[in-house]
Length: 173
Image (tube, rainbow, N blue to C red):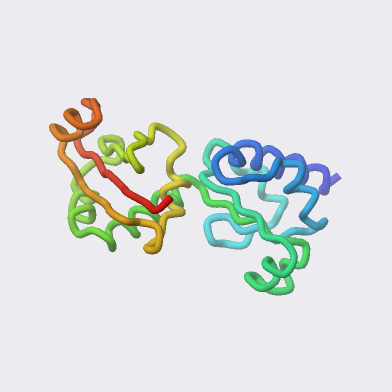
């Protein structure tokens, strides 16, 4: 019974996040995991029985590790694989911290601007929704540039007039 609940919960989580972060189908992911995978949510180990407490719409990323990779990363506790989940709130903290370290201009802007008033643009793509996971996966070796632009530049370059600030990111593809 618990295994079926776990399987169903995992499939729901994977379905909601796989289109953003995975190249495998939900069934392929579930089949590769053993009967007792190690779960980590927002950097903390979690009992699989608590997975049902998470609303799939709050999930930013879901990453799975199998076999040697899982054991090397998390030890023997991950013999059956590991499932790492980042919620949107956690992902926001990750990318805001990273961008603040990368750019003093961003660090200043993020302390004075409401999140809802910021528009992120990644390699020319205007990020509308469910962007938190994508931004939280950026790192030094992939980020080529970050520029904070004001509302006038945002309007002129991207035809966006409902935001106060734009954050234009360039990454290696």
